[in-house]
Length: 354
Ligand SMILES: C[S@@+](CC[C@H](N)C(=O)[O-])C[C@H]1O[C@@H](n2cnc3c(N)ncnc32)[C@H](O)[C@@H]1O
Image 1 (cartoon, rainbow, N blue to C red):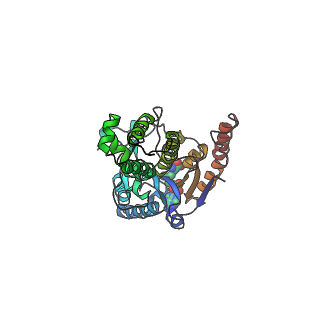
Image 2 (spheres, rainbow, N blue to C red; image 1 turned 90 degrees about the vertical axis):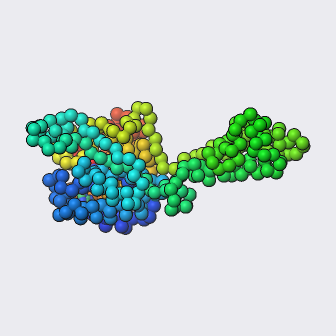
Image 3 (cartoon, rainbow, N blue to C red; image 1 turned 180 degrees about the vertical axis):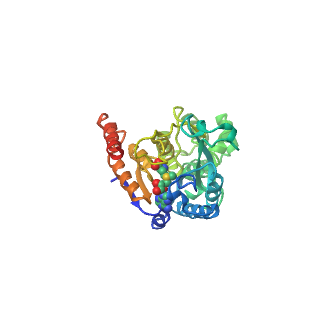
C-alpha cells in the first residue's frame, strides 16, 4: 500500500513519527477564522493560533529529512504570522502566490465602494527547507550551507586523486594552467567549484607529469568519467530535489484554476494539477510525502499519480474515509491501461461525492 491516512490530530500523530522520516511536508493547515468550519475556530486569539503553528513547525523540523522540502498554505491575512513561525525553524525560500482566476472567489460580487482594502484573491504558499540544508546533508548542521562545499565534499575522491598525482609529480597548479592553456587548475585541484578535466586536458596533464619519466595519472579517463557520474548521482541525491521545466509554472506566481464546486466538495480542496506540480518539482519518485491536514486527499492523489508514497493525517472521520476512498481508486500515470486510469480515478470521485 502506497498510502495511509491516519484519523487523528496532527500534532499528536506527528509526535509519534520518527525523526527524518519524510521527504516532503506539503500541507494546508487551518487558516484561523476564515472558513465557517469548526476546525478553523479552534483558537480564540491569533496568538494561540500562532503558538500552535510553532508547535507544528517543531514537528515538521524533526520529521523532515535533511534534504526535504516544506510547503505550507496560509491565508493572506495570517501568512505573515505563519511564515514567522516557520522561519523560527526553517529557511524560508520564498512565498509563492497562488493567484486565483477571475470569478473563482467572491471578488467580483463585492461592491467595490465597500472595500476598505484590496480583495484577497490569492493564497500564500510558504516554501522552505532546513537551515543549512546542504551541510546537514553531510552531517554538519549548524552553519549556513554552501552548495559548493557539498559538491566539493562529494567529489573529494576524484579531486584527491588528481591533486595527489600533481603533488607527487612536483608540478604546481600554475604550471598545469600553462600547459593546458586554461585557468582551471583551481577547479581541478581544490574543493571550490570542483570540476572534472576534459579528456583532452587530462591527457595534457598526464604528458606534463610524465615528461621526465614516471607513471603518473595512470587511471584511464573513461574510468574517471564513470566514477564522476556515480558521484554526481550521489550529489544529486543529497541535495534537496527541485525540478521544473519551461512547460511548468516555474515562477513564484501560480495561476492554477480552483476546483469547481460540486456536491460534497471539501471547502478547501486544492487543485490536483497544483499539487502534482509541487510533488513533481520537489520530490523524487518513491519519496514519502506527509500532509498532516489531508482534507480531501488532493496531496495524496497527486503523490499516487506520480509514484510517491503518501501519509495523511485528518481530524475528521468523514474526510479520513473519503480520502481513503479517493486514493484507493487512483492508478499512477504510468499505468499500462491509459483508458482505465482516468476512468477509475473519476469513478472514485463520482461515487464518493454524488
Ligand atoms: C484547509 S483544510 C485542507 C484541505 C486540503 N488541502 C484539500 O485539498 O482538501 C484543513 C483540513 O485539516 C483538518 N484539520 C483541522 N484541524 C486539524 C488537526 N488539528 N489535526 C488534523 N487535521 C485537522 C480539517 O478537518 C480539514 O479537512
